[in-house]
Image (tube, rainbow, N blue to C red; front, side, top):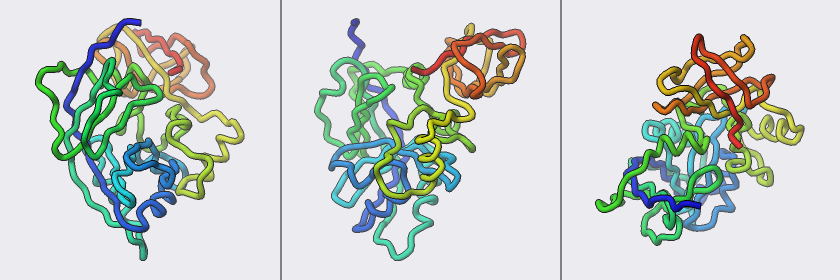
Amino acid sequence: MAEEELTATPIERDIVIVEGSDARSYLQTQLTQDIEAIPLGQSVWSFILDPKASIEALVRVTRIGHDRLAFDIEPGYGESVRARLDGLLFRTDARFSQATWPGVAWRGDGSSTRTFDAPIVSVCSGRSPEGVDVIGPNVSAPVNLPSADLEAMRIHTGWPAMGSEIMEGITPAMTGLIDATVSFDKGCYTGQEPVARSYHRGAAPTKRLVRVSAAPGTVAAGSEFRINDEPAGQITSMLATGDGLGYLARKFDCPADATIEEARLRVTELA
């Protein structure tokens, strides 16, 4: 296998810090992951859901102290995450603060074995390429390493983003991230019942995240596509190369050939 070039790309993340003697137990009732089980210094990805199991946010949660946790999320979404969680407190010792921290997305061979000193040091896993995200108030990128196209990496690995793949009405099963974001061994949390019921029944979601590919410049995000002249799905992200992501309705199998007016595209599963 060819070596992947080591890159260090500047990033920025909205941060919500939750601390206090009740912080972990409170968040355990609000997130899909087992927050109580996060080891000190480690991170997990989790959804925040509404009562009907629609995704409100996809966040990374890092335990940065005994009773201190940091959420990081795409810029522009920190305020809504804080408002969603902070607004439900009642006689609970859980204090919230908010910030924007710089970071560096290290990617390529050897990136995940380097040593870093920052509040958030999260090794990429699952569908992501080898790498580690280093985030903190004093983090800066080295000047002697190139940057990577993180959006292209995200799309090629099929990782959903807030505002494109994650929007109103999207549930965890639709994203294909159940195994990476949901614990079925913890207690109750907001939206748990619909998630657990569909998972244990093996019910397929009404639509699922898929890869799409077309000739460069022929289709755009937001376009709806058809298979056998039937409405089949919608593109959510698209690169200039013609590679993208989208949602495909449950009734359609793939790989499949689809059309958007005169343009043709190929639809394939993420895995």
